[in-house]
Length: 168
Image 1: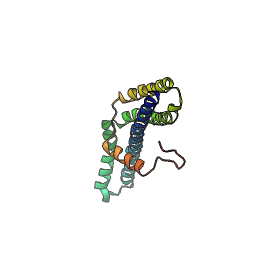
Image 2: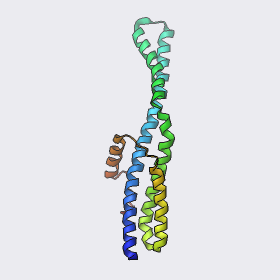
Image 3: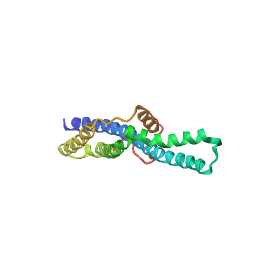
Image 4: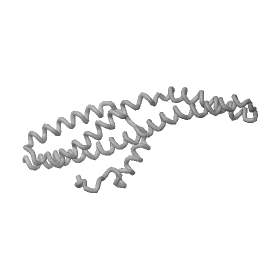
């Protein structure tokens, strides 16, 4: 019975490892997108504002519509970014990406090493990891679907696999 229970628990560890693999990498893709978006929303208004100011300072009215458009964009972009509240996602995405990545590693190690420990120790470590996973899942934070698809494609092409990694 103990060997069967250890095998079943090992299978659960592998399943949770895979779920954490996909979740952590989905969150990493989303986190990169949030950081790039923040940079764009900060830099674009600065550049457009500078270009619009330069045209006004030159006193050349040939491009008055372009200048007005650049000034408008420089003014609107920060308001749009603030309205989207993307900065509020950064701390949550960062924390959860790290937690799921740590759980991915933990479940992988537990699947490999746990069956060689006494069953009650293996089970206690699994329960501890499951509690952490449940706490992370309680936030129900969901990145956009395209992040999952991109992460899945990267995983399937071996992007997160290292040459000396044992198969899990």
